[in-house]
Length: 251
Ligand code: ADP
Ligand code: MG
Image (cartoon, rainbow, N blue to C red; front, side, top):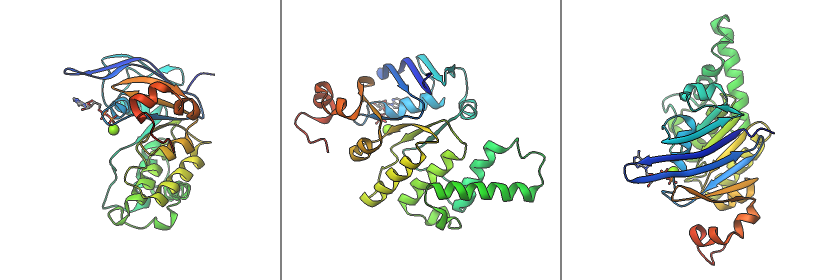
């Protein structure tokens, strides 16, 4: 089967620094693939290149067997890519529902072109409410974003990302700053989305990674040093030495 994401020989040089060092990476259709590694390993830089926000120095990226190297971000989104950010990125003075409805409108702009305004708005709001239910935020639909807790903002950001109905969702540290209960909530939400979207999950919370990931790749100084199941990664000597620290407990 064609993987949903196929990255080959990707390189990104910043002045004097190799942030992405000949990376090969595949995400299979339906998979949750975790990307872990220490701070500065190049995880966010890799995601930015996948989204077309940052131009690679060399290498190729395919989405569902199709090269996306020449496409800008918007073109990649229409082919089924979406992302969430390490730092939350929402419209603070709008309601929760509006944030999702606006994202849904971007996707469905064409199909609603000939509809009346009221019908369009009703349909978008219904769709937004359904997306909020998927992230367990329906009770906060009319709250202003500025009044949400950090955990609620992370859940909302996820609803905004899936509003474009992506095939592959890139998640940059969705658990960052969350308490234990909020992290568990996020794990449950992501698990619930697994049957509708493949995911590349950048995350430091190893409990969440081991709970969710089908496979894990380990990035160190821009290089993938290991790729495999949770057990393979736990027992990989290079991973233990380079990243997890010899003798450290792995959950
Ligand atoms: P991670 O997300 O794994 O913590 P990053 O992708 O943010 O790592 O950063 C990887 C490396 O690239 C770091 O050394 C960082 O300082 C460097 N870097 C990131 N963005 C830029 C940039 N725009 N210009 C120069 N160096 C950068
Ligand atoms: Mg990062």
